[in-house]
Length: 304
Image (cartoon, rainbow, N blue to C red; front, side, top):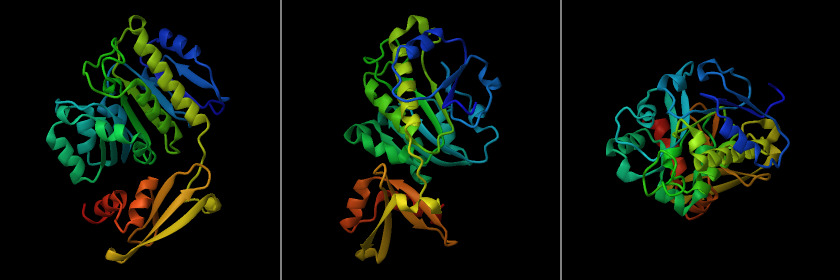
């Protein structure tokens, strides 16, 4: 499997999806492996694996053999108490959750309260629409990804399972897939929430193929940059910002390759942690204010 960029594992034969994907033009040089074996039997290569299945994955399927969970969730919200998002938010081994595209009126208040109590990062649909790029730093550090296609508004995929008039646009779910592909921590992505018979749902089949295309194109051009790597320090520019009211100096790193940003945080043991952030948070610090990303990590470290 070393010659392949990623593997796609489907829960059932999906010839219509494969046909739709083959109609798209690749702009990078890579190979994708498709397997129609049951997901429980899918191999675990040292490459990202994308699970494509009509139903949401089982909680045990995600948590098995993992001592910690760092997850991106793209879903609209749900009133069901056993919803996958709710279980992941409450799971004691979950270290980070970035929940993107949720709709407040579809989400029980206690879920949002628990997100806040554990200092996780939600980005509601309206906040994402105001600034789509704000989702990229939230997605970047997590290795597991859940994409529920019911998060897309009904008018964009009328043959899908989602029936809500509001939701992500089709092009927005593709942009989020591109951000996921650009993450250097990507291990697995679960895409679900579509009709079992894709043959009778041509629009969502084509959109699903385009989501995969954006994911793989981004993955194929992903620049491997790691602020933890001492051999890559020449790839970053360090900027110091003195916060006078708090008598504190913040250290930002910006990539000379991609323009991405990090905050450097000194842990209690003297080691450094690099937190993905946005350029806007650097601007916030220049105004003398502590960025929300820094505050969230500080509270998670010293209050929990």
